Image 1 (cartoon, rainbow, N blue to C red):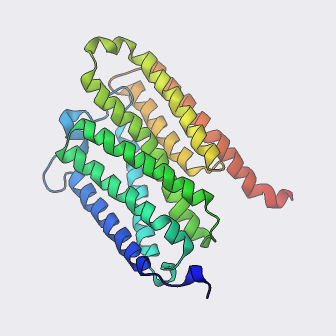
Image 2: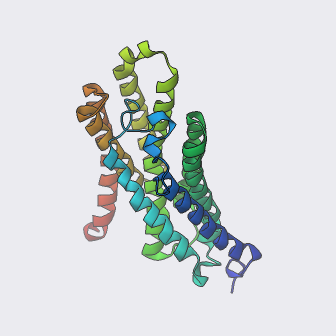
Image 3: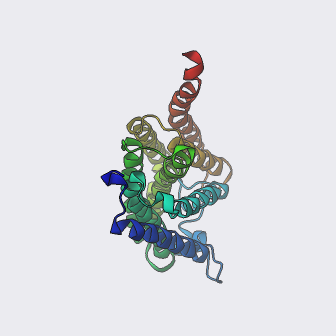
Length: 271
């Protein structure tokens, strides 16, 4: 057995920390959903986090992606706790980082329930930074991968988490700014929203490029942008320019990695 496969004292600790982090995240999610009689996330902070809290908030159905992300994180936590994963070099490189993202995920819900709107912005920016670090490590590491399970539960789930939180950071920040900027700024909301979405397009393409055109972040980002467009067309506040731009940006961030991923699938048959 080589040195990298030998048991270390930190291996069991890492597995326990990941399980603890996912437990904390789920407890925070249940509280955030209002399961114990408190208001749900969208009703907290004076309604600033609801779908009508800003011009960059997506429609309610967009948030169903959390079910997929949470299921993936739970599955990852269980899988990484198996004895066969204890000394995995990939788990050693990524387990602590994924635990950090789950902890920050739960802390955002705590901040939304007990803190201030500005604190939610601070926490979600930290979560976004942690997800960027984690996803970059996942796709760049040269350690041997654990097959399809590894690809789905590490690269795939982290990618979805990153893509969604990218848009959620924009929406969260916009909600906070909406509560502090002068009311007359609303006249420039269309122009500001379009400009922000152009930056989102550049960020989405940057994530794709730096991750060798992995598609999962783009899927989550495009999902959120599509529902942002739906809310601007049919919800409040309405904005045709922002809605159209959101749809264009969704296509811009999704098509390049989707095309590259498709080519990777068919390359063996071409060769």
